[in-house]
Length: 262
Image (cartoon, rainbow, N blue to C red):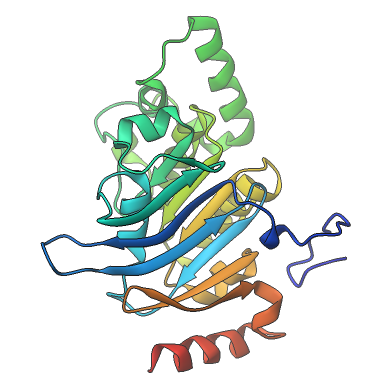
């Protein structure tokens, strides 16, 4: 079987989305102030080797979902599960140790440090031998030639697209199994954005990571997506495998707009 994105899927008696997810937020309720909930019983699940994408209008809780799942915001109800284990309330530094990476929308590099120094900071929470650190650097450089070519430059001198590559490369240093990615191409030109989406797709479809993607560029994001959640006012109003939303992206966008009441 081949999906609309052209990816061959292994034969299985059970669709991946009916199997236990690798990482999930179950019936999450969360907000930034008391008695005002942004997330209202929202559930989102991701599987290894797959990308789940959350779409919806601005202000519906998409970024809040990622913050709650990574530990920046403790849910008042619901669970965060990793391979079925309840890790709700784990702080962000512990989430890193558990193999969960978070890529925020805003730049997160240290601009005056070199690219390689930023990469090494991806292992600040780990105690590894110098040889192991170098081995991971070598693997990251092999996957990101542009990053290697800029490794001795201050990160702040790189273009927006190059900085995004460095951020993804830095996260790979910790070898996470889960990626929570918020607006990966925000502020990046369309041509460079295409390469960023290819990198994000590679995290799941080549490296086997479980990816939860939040994005406003719906057409580009859904080109690489396996499972879709349509969110309105902090709750899921529609969800399912990408192919169930229609044979083309325009049909999916139309359904999203209808579900969002716009």
